[in-house]
View 1 (spheres, rainbow, N blue to C red):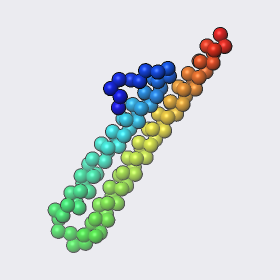
View 2 (view 1 turned 90 degrees about the vertical axis):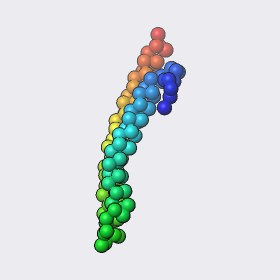
View 3 (view 1 turned 60 degrees about the vertical axis):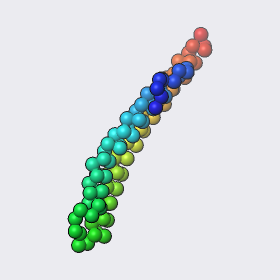
View 4 (view 1 turned 135 degrees about the vertical axis):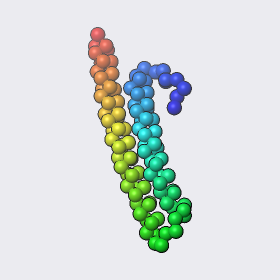
Amino acid sequence: MYEQKPRFPGAEPWWDFDEECRKANAELEQALDKPGADRDRVLSGEGEWSARDCIEAAANARYEAKKQSAQKARDEKVQRAQEELFKRLGEQEAEDRRHAEL
C-alpha cells in the first residue's frame, strides 16, 4: 500500500480501486481465520480419532468450502470495483475529449 496517494493525472480511480481490492483481500483473510483455526485444532491431534483419515478429510473439506465461499465473495467485490473503475475511466476519457474539442 502506498504511504501517500500516487499523484498523476487520472490516479484517483486507480487509487480507489486499489483500496477496494485491499479491503476485499483483508476481508478474505479475516473470513478464513476461524475456519482455519477450527481445522488446525481438529488436525492437531487433540482428539483420539478412530477414523483419523475421515476426520482429516472432513476438516479439510469444510475449510476448503469456507475458503471457496470467501474467495467468491472477494472476487465479486473486486469485480464490482473493477466495473466502477472502468466506468470512472470512461467518464474521464469523455471529459478529456470534451476539453480537447473546446
